[in-house]
Length: 110
Length: 128
Image (cartoon, each protein chain N blue to C red):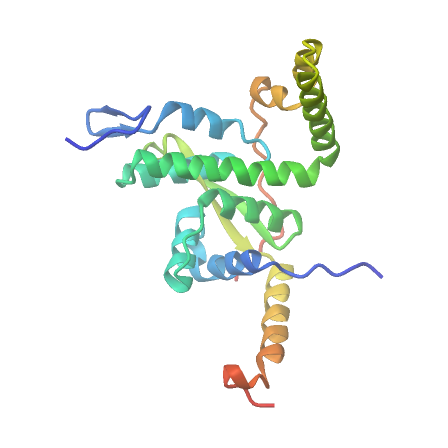
């Protein structure tokens, strides 16, 4: 049986931000989603490193847009969750919800 | 007139990011979609981010790439550690020959090799 790898906290944040950004999920909007919701500023390099890891795991897929002069002639790299990525996010949601439930300090009930 | 950070240039209405920072970013082959990252940084820079911000992002990207490289090629980092120890030991006894160990450091190739090609588009995306 293969060892299951759980999502890291930044990996989960990035996956959720990709989902929230929808069709416009490239580096800048992903970083903004994370910052707006979590109040935490994450470097674009860290986001791309995380996306590289997630793509290697088959949880996201990427495609290139059109290059623009505003970006120095470079194309945007758009990211989307794969079916496997969506399953991982749902599993993480389910696991965290179960863990949080029943903790009095967090107002949870048994 | 606003202060300029090292390497920042203005060309009419277009701001040019610090060249050295951009060159360093272009060497980060460990990060997939590297051009996407550089494009994002340039885009934000054009929107008014400072040169200091660009440099900060560059250094953080270098650190992130180094971590990826460490995870993918631990043997290379083991060699690097051995070379550093060799240099330190040689320096401590006043020997000059350990300086040539620097030539064996794999990271020199990081500065000299051509850009890695962008990976092709990955498939199996689902519309979420």
